[in-house]
Structures are given as C-alpha cells and as structure tokens.
Image (cartoon, rainbow, N blue to C red; front, top):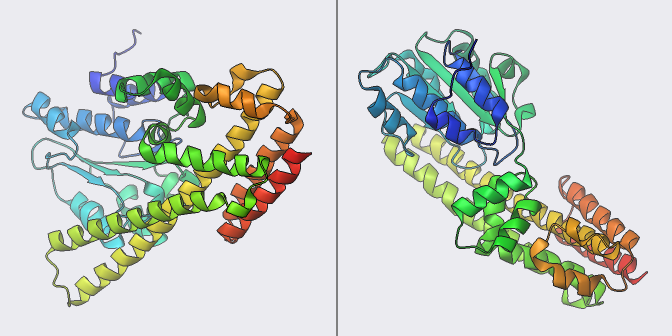
Amino acid sequence: MPSVAPPPAIDAATADQPAARLALTSALAAPSHAYLFVGPRGAGKGDAARAFAAELLADRAPDPDDARRRALADPSPHPDLVWLRPPGTQHLVDEVRERVISAAAYRPFEGERRAFVIEAAEAMADESQNALLKTLEEPPAYAHLILVSSEPEALLETVRSRCQPVRFAAMSPQALEQRLAAGAPDTSAPGRRAAARLAAGDGGRALLLLAGDGRELRESAIAIVRGAREDELSEAPWRRLLAAAETAGERATEEARAAAAALAAEAGEEEGSAPGRRRAREGEESARRAGRRARTEVLDLGLALVAAWLRDLAAVADGASELALNADRLAELEAEAAGIGAIAGRRGAEEAMQTRRRLRVNVSEELALEALGFRLAELLAD
C-alpha cells in the first residue's frame, strides 16, 4: 500500500520528527478522541499540535482552506479551537473546567469537530486532572483533546492511559543549527553552532543562548570557572549567576500576574466578589510559582553551562578540540586549558552537575554555588 503524504502544515511542523510525522498522518484517517504529545522541550510538540488541530478542523469544514488558515494562526480566531496555556507554572483549575470540560459539551460552531489543546499539561494540578477524566473517558464524538507535555510523569496514570501517545525525540545539534540559521539569520555561524551544541536538544534553549540574556548567562557561568581558576573567589563570581536568576524570576512573576489579571477581566468578575477573590488567589499563587520556576531554570541552565565549559577544557587538554560544545570560543578554551589536567576538568564538571542536583532539593542557592566555587578552585589548582 503506498504511503500517504502528510499535509503541508504537519510536514513542516515535524520536519525533524519522522516518527511523529508518520503517526499524525496516519491518525488523520480515523482520529482518536485524545492524544498526548510527549518529548523534550523544544522538540516541536506545540507546532505539531497546532498543525494537527488545524487538519482536524479543516476536514469536512464548509471552507477547509479558510478553516485551516485560521486554526494555524497564533492566537487563533477559529471558534472551534481552544488553546490553553498556563498563566504561570500551573493551569488555573477554573480555566480548565470552563474552557475545556464545560466547553466540550457544546457542538462545533462551524464544521463537524472541536479541538482542545492543553499546552504544558503537566502543569495541571491533580484537581484539574481528575476533573478532566470524565471528558477523557466519555468525550463527545466531535471533541478531540490534545495534551502536550515535556514531563508526562507528572500526569496522573489515569490521564496518560486514556490518551494515545505521540512521541517526539530531542533535536540533534545539526537539526537545531539548521533551525537557528532560519530563525536567527543575523547571528554568527559559530555562535549558532555553539548554541545548538549547548542546548541539549532544546530548541527554545538554543534561541535563548543566542539572545542577550543567554549570552549574559554564558558569561556568568564562565566567570565562575575563571574565578576558581584564578583564585579570585573573594569577588564571589557566582553572584552574577544569582542576579540573572533573580531578574528572570521577577520578570516571570510580573508576566504571570498580568496574564492572570487579563483572564479575570475577560471573565468579568468583580474584584471583591467571591469568584473574583478566588481567581485572584489562584493568580497570585500561580505568579509566585512562575517566578520560582523561572529562577530555578536559569540556575539549572547556568550550572549546565559551567559543566560544559569545564568539559570543554578537559577535551582541549586531551587534544580533542573538535568535541568542544563552546565551539565559538576555542581560542579562549585553548588558552585556559594550559596547565589544567583533563581529569581535573571532568571532575569539575561532575561537581557542577552535582550542584544542579542539590539545588533541586531546596538547599541554599548561594551556599551551594559558593561551595562549588571553592571545590573547583581545589580541583583546578591540583
């Protein structure tokens, strides 16, 4: 039997995901009521979900091309596409109930299908997931739910088991570099190569590393290693990384507060009413979680960059410069690798990764980074 060509939007969204492309193209013949798109961040799950939803809504629509065009827009004006993003680190329970569970009971406005996409589905609280179970178990024939998740283990097993999985693999450095060349053409080729290698398959992280905040984060990470190497720890170089994390956390908190306020205004709830107070509490808690999450992500990435610089020093010391992740800074690596043993570099990278793990169990951030600095000073001096 000849293979069916994927629709152009799905083909473009899954250009680097052949398994997902095949699964989604095959699914269009007889769509399931619920899907779970799983894979690492930046693997293209969101783009694929939008393309798949657009094909579902275009099928048997009065004007398929127009329905597809509107569904592919972001934000989409198509009345039968509901796209849920968490305003912070967690979906609001009321929003899941109103925009997905309750809305799924209404018939399509235009064609014969409705599509509900829940981005970052792992950010649903257990209450939201349990409430969603009935919709997953007994959905209307016209309703299709697409859950998108980078951390499916955070979803209840009862939710996962009711969805058909579509798996996305981490992007290769080569594929990421090609995507960066198209999405950030004004950046240098060596910079794109380094960002693609340092991103560990995460397209969003690769773009961040090319932007101003990402470049500053790299400098903060390298400063920790250089401070340890040159015995300048009295300057506390790790505070530069802490400051970057603090800025990211504050920005994320304010953005989440603004998003929650916009949702409250859209709902038309009076500020002093019981529903208004409840939504305000949820919004503030969500904003705090967003800030904590952004701060943690910056620290995590910063320590990953510390480990990458140390591994690169070890690679250069071993005569394997071609393996360096920081491919745009080989001259600096070669100068700094002089006098540093490869073993010391690798052990330093292991210490940085161990610090990453410590920060996930609520240890003091500054004390953990300070301890890392002094441990690196010992290793690199030896």
